[in-house]
Image (cartoon, rainbow, N blue to C red; front, side):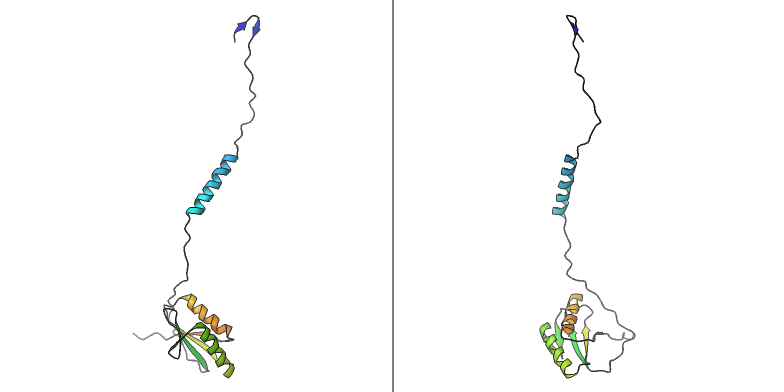
Length: 143
């Protein structure tokens, strides 16, 4: 402090308050990170699950009238060894149920068929009015 004349020069007083952290830049960074992870994330494409169905030791033959559909590995359906579409399945089941209402629908499914094709076939049978829909199994082969 220098004396000029008789007056003293005083430096201005700075009032120090409580220190603050501003939140605006932090929020900006969080939103940028969120956008970054949303853009770079890769979601897996789940088209269905392949299930190898086991053999059953307690398989038994049904003694009632039944309709048998076969579901192959590639998802195709056959009835009496002839290929049919899912729309034909509904029609065939309706015809069989009209003749005998207690008819059971059996599905002989390849163990490498997808679950989605099995569910689609079951839905076609149920939409035709079938109350008993079962999956045929085979007894394990002796070794």
